[in-house]
Amino acid sequence: MARREAGGMGGSGGTAVKGARRPEVRLPPLEQFAGGELEPDGDYDGLEFREADFAGQDGGGARFMDCALTGCALDETRLQHARVLDSVLTGLRGVGTDLAEATLRDVEVVDARLGGAQLHGAVLERVVVRGGKIDYLNLRAARLKDVVFESCVLVEPDFGGARLERVEFVDCVLKEADLTAAVLKDVDLRAAAELGIARGVDRLAGAVISPAQLVDLAPVLAAEMGIRVEG
Image (spheres, rainbow, N blue to C red):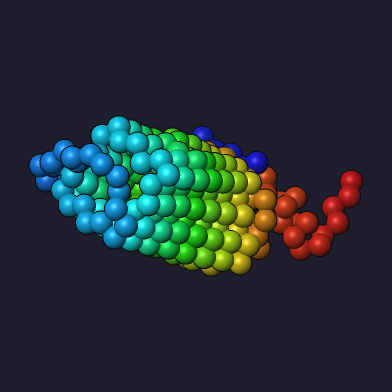
């Protein structure tokens, strides 16, 4: 596992990499959600959802704009093709949340505790994921642009076939990531607290890592290239 050096962003020379543009979410005064179940293709605008239990419900194709979701349960919630825009999601929890082919734009995700979340084919643009822990995050074939993973733990995230552009990992623990067939452009991994890549290390072209991370990844890189290293 590669760990970040004390002192942060690498050597004195540095490597030019375009930083991610973070969302600037300014929520208007919100109305409290009246309750009830989510509706497929529902339209939710300017609402606050607090401690709502959406387990097993179907909100596929729904649109959430200028919303705050706080402490909501999303176990097996179906949100395929949903659009989440200019919203703040805090303390979400759940297993098997289905956000396949959803769109998240100008969104802050704070202190989420999710397992097996499905975002394959999703589009994430100007998104910050801050704090919390997400296990087995499925981002296969997703498109990430201007995304920051900050002070969170990602266990076995799957970026297979995904496109990542201007993505940053800041004080983020990345365990056993799968980058198979992924395309990376201006991806900054130098500030990752821990960097572990299980598959697809050859796809790091387009990413920037620190010298210490390069040393720690050397055995994985050698194995990928078929190099035998013997004492």
